[in-house]
Every structure is written in C-alpha cells, then in structure tokens.
Amino acid sequence: MHKHILKSKAEKYNSIMINYLIVPGLGNSGAEHWQTYFENSGDNFFRINQQEWDSPICEEWIKTIDQKVIEFDLSTVILIGHSLGCSTIAHWSIKYNRQIKGALLVAPSDLEAPQYTFPAVGFTPISITKLNFKSIVVASTNDPWVSLERAKLFAESWGSDFINIGEAGHINAASGHTNWDEGMRILNTIY
Image (cartoon, rainbow, N blue to C red; front, side, top):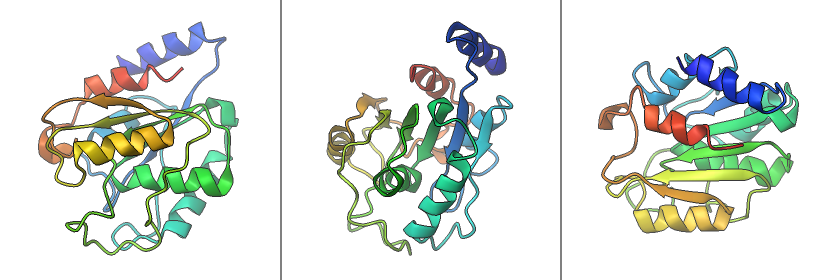
C-alpha cells in the first residue's frame, strides 16, 4: 500500500523517485520498530548501517551517512532519523553541508541530559546550527530521552517544523510505534 502511495506522489513530482535513507539511533532499530516498517515499505528505502551500534563515535557515524547519501542525486534524498540518529544528522549537516531534499527527525535524544549515560563519543554539544534543508521534528510529551521543551529548542535551532504527537513515549517499538502510519503521512509532507 505504501509503495503505491509513494509512487503516486513521486509521479506527481515529475516522476522523481525519492530515496529515503533511514538513520537509526543507538543500538539500531529492531524488527518491530517503525523504521524497519518504513524500510520494508518500498524499494526506495535504505537503512544506513553503522559499524558500531552500541558505543558510537560521531565522526564515524556521519562519515557512514555521507558515504550513503552521495550514492544518490542529492535532490532526491530524505533522511529519516530516530533518537541519536537525529543529532547525528545535525552533525552531518554541519560537516558535509550537502543540500538534500529534507529530513524527518523523530524523538531526538537529549545527549546533554543527566539521564543520558550511554557511551557515545563526539555527539555533544548537540548542534544548534540551522539545517540547510527542509526538516520536521516529531516529539512526544512523555519521552524519557528528551523533554518537550528541548525537542522544541532543537526544532527551532535546526529550522525544522515541529509536531507534538502527544503521549507517545520515545516513539519506538516499546511505545507501540511499529506500523506507524501517522509517521508515514508526516514523511509524505516533505516535498
């Protein structure tokens, strides 16, 4: 169903096929996660696989993103980040300054919060530089990894549209976001 929806949208926009590059956060996104659902929804969805998912180094993660992005016509690329993947995209944007079509940034983790004690190197301070492409930040009111206020600050700093979807936890499989149709609808607004 989603493949048909995306193809119809692409046909409306001069038959340009959009390439969706999925940027998971810490630990990757498992089989039940909405990012996997997105990945399986069409041939134009690609997961960016990192070498080290559990003790990430920002410089390595952004290099891996860039290697995948440059495989495509940049004007067709939309990045789909979750959690740590969102701040990784922000760091990638500063370092490589590529003009892509856009990004969907879901539940951006606040690595500067005291509860964020995971081994992640080089991701702080969180970039507050405006992104040079269209972006949407999606957040919830009860995410344990980012307060709504901080998510709004990130969106404002990055020049992103902001969507609060209410009490949705970290917007992952644990909070029931598996076949996340609302997320797919939001993604389809990045044109």
